[in-house]
Length: 145
Image 1 (cartoon, one colour):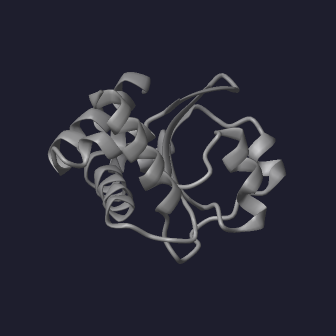
Image 2 (cartoon, rainbow, N blue to C red; image 1 turned 90 degrees about the vertical axis):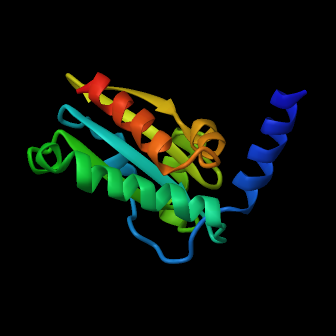
């Protein structure tokens, strides 16, 4: 029963979430190209905004800035913030099966991408606080480096 309620809550939050100002536009060519070895957090948002979505974005930015500055400088870690309300970004949303807010950890190694959808984790752990959210995402990134 708890799982069912959690899923319903996730669906409702995902459908109503996003932010208003565009940050990055991803062309189809850029989406299809093979990348150098890198671990990226891909934060997706849509037209509307909610407090939880804003928290996920802020926590992700803070985590990358505070814990992975060296790796960002070396282009081993990155953060992409993608506005799904822009027509140009629909294809990348479709690729990762994200229609509203979402958090994906993408890992490129030797020209091959693997990724994990961390959206459910993100929303479920916002209630436990910023520290646990950052610890778990940081742990996942370090495993992939």
